[in-house]
Image (tube, rainbow, N blue to C red):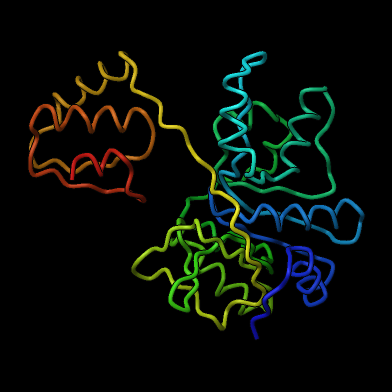
Length: 281
């Protein structure tokens, strides 16, 4: 039976009563990560109350403005001040910067690092899991995953995976089959995705209303170099080609120049709909 909780601490406490000391928690990739739940779990682990493993990807951190730039500092505070990062990663970064080993009160496995994370925190690289995105849920299940924590949208009486519909439904079903716990952070800012993205009510154990702003990724203007590369690539792509485009400045540049060069009959293949694809539609 689903229980609506007053706060994250209550939801985590109820979940721990149910599953015990050993916790293997999987979280949503990117903006949907249940960081507030992960932080409470980490508090329990730091006190020695649980043995915690976290399995996540692209766990986003608040960017830091250039030192001494007050204008950017105020902009960053307005954009990211209410966003909750995973504090364990901040502790790891601080330890690495001081030449100390990273904290060992939990194990953090990731299959998709944020840019530069492995170089910034070398001690984390030994826990990196090199698995394909499609195999991430099976990788977690085989290691004893017994908890899912994530942000979710809620509309018309249905919870929805929002920004990560591909592997989280399978992870939720796997956790429920093993008697684990599913905690959702219901967030009105989370998009509602169509198709096979709804989370069955029977699979949800604990829900906390948490409408913190989602992480905002700044969209930088294209540089002259990126325009040059995009123009060159677009020149060798024929009409009717099938494109695999990801995210980022280079994909945007190529998309822009494909349109400028009047390419037609193009097909797209991607794990997500990026701004570049939207520009070409």
